[in-house]
Length: 292
Image (cartoon, rainbow, N blue to C red; front, side, top):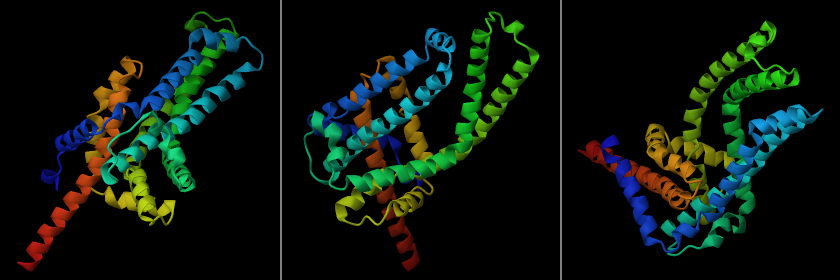
């Protein structure tokens, strides 16, 4: 199976798709701009001066924490739908003969006639991934929360030296920090395989809607798990090959994303096509050996 599966060939096909599509780099502009805005706002909220100012305001701590959690959730959902627009447009390019894209295609998912089913599937998938991610989320909350707790404690009590923090406070911090670290590692090991098991849901969704075969979000999740049996490591390695690109996005304040995002999502579609081709070849080999 693995000899039939080439990640290099998948990426080459994705690059060819980009070369053959006029205006492809206008497609991710909205997503890039939103990502840059989110990054800017998040960096401002995590600035030490901002944290100190909040700590000195009565009753502002919980408001700050609520905003710090609520904003990433809302903006993350919006950004996810912009990414879905990129993936859906690539579906139209690869399967429906679309040869040119524009800036407005960055909102294509919101204009889909079956948008309600797309929303339902997105939140169903997100809910199941959330359940699998609970240990990781709880661990991360303890890890970050314990550090924030110490900072607020020092500011609120005018403590400038860590050595002056009471042992009881340090013990609470240590318990939360190391407990959170352990739980985060366990949670990550549980979450990662499930993330890749559901990684074909969006692709299968677009095809099901196009063919009129949509029978529910739960069924798409099951189909994705079935398709990804034996391919989760391959998909992880495909994502790993893009790590350098994603680092470059951060270093260029998102600007390189106009190239990387279409490239990445085109690779996902060609990954799916390669699974179909590989399974077809293997089926033919098995059939020939059976008849021989």
